[in-house]
Amino acid sequence: MELHATRTIAADRMTVWAALNDPEVLKACIPGCSELTGSPEDGFEAVVTQKVGPVKATFKGAVTLTDVVPGTSYTISGEGKGGVAGFAKGAAQVSLSDAEGGGTDLHYDVEAKVGGKLAQLGSRLVDSFAQKMADQFFERFQARLEGPAEDGAGA
Image (cartoon, rainbow, N blue to C red; front, side, top):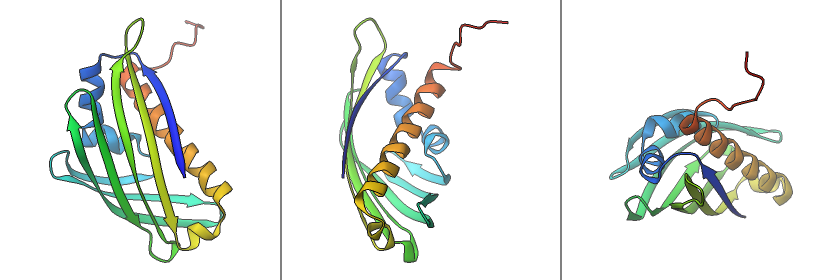
């Protein structure tokens, strides 16, 4: 399964970079994450609980950052085991660039694989779930950096 997207975040590139490397920010943005420890240098350990179709599982896994170019890009790789539910593993190339008109473009290319009961659910369900998870993460990430959205209905 592959995902590719770009989001424009109303923050300067170094602010976005710092947030992408902050365990507290990542924990708050990862849907279902109950625990995230570690550091960008040593890698992170995470505990995430999710329900995919009829399968609910708690995944415990490790995440490492490689090919780090500070302020510009890195590759994030991880693998999580969910007991009888199976496993998920994958990698994402994340890159930042200055957006036209200000802000930062955050681009990501993700490749992921699942096995066990999760794989038996069918690729359409798993792909749709993965897209939803990525969207939720980046929506939360963007909201955290930009603050509450302006709805134009000021009080």
